[in-house]
Amino acid sequence: MGCFLNGILKLINMRKLAIIDIDGVLCDYPNEVFFNFIFKQINKKFISKDEIISNFGETEYERLKLEYRLSGEKLKIKPKPFAKESLFKLKEQGFEIWIVTSRPRWDPVARHTFLWLTKNSFVFDHLMFIDKKGELKLNSNYEQLIIIDDDYDGLVDYVESENVTLIHFTENQEQKHNKVHTISSWIEFDRLIFNYHTILYKL
Image 1 (tube, rainbow, N blue to C red):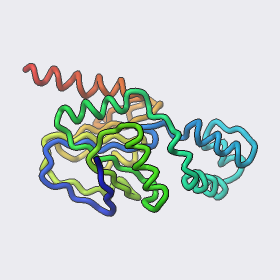
Image 2: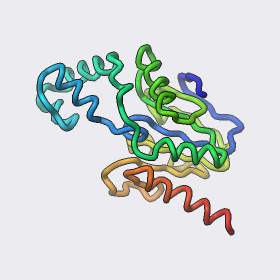
Image 3: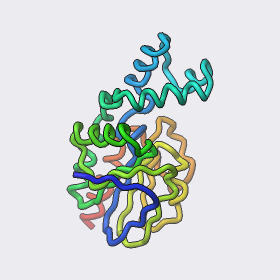
Image 4: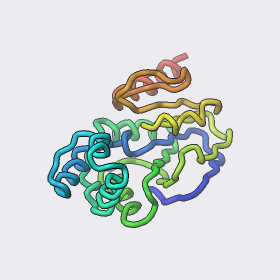
C-alpha cells in the first residue's frame, strides 16, 4: 500500500497530489494516549504539552516524548473522525496520496507509524519521514496539489507554488495568510475541497 522514503524528494510526472501530515491532521496531537502514558510515568495528569513543559522543562518533556515514541503506545491512537473517508475520496478523484511526517525514521517509530496507518485502513501511496517540511522540493508537473499540515510553518514555503491548495488544520480559525485555508475538522475539509470540485465539474 505504501513505501518508506527519506531525504529531500523531487516529485516527477504527478498530475494530482495530496500531501498530508499525521500528528494533528490524521490524529489529535497531543492526545489522550500520550497524556495517559505521561500519567503512568510520573503519576500526574496533564491536559496540554505546554503544561508538561511548564512543570518539568523542555528537556524532561523531550525525554518523556522519546519514551512514548519507543513504547508502541501510538498504535492505540484513534484517527480523527472522517479522516479515513476523506482520503478515500481523494483517491477516488485520482489523487496520489503522500503521508509526510516529521517523526523520526528509525525503528520502532517508523514501523509503528506504518502499522498505525494500515491498521486504521488509510489509503496512501507513500510514507515519507522528513525533518523540515519546507525541504520537500516540488516541480510543476501537477495540475492540482493539496498540502495539509497542523504546522503553519510547514505550509508557508509553498504559497508561491502554482495550482496549490494549502490547508492549515488547527483549532485556531484565524487565517494567517490569504492563500492558506484554515479548518478544524475533516468535515470542513470535505466542504472546502469536494463541494468546490463538484461545482467546478458541472461548469
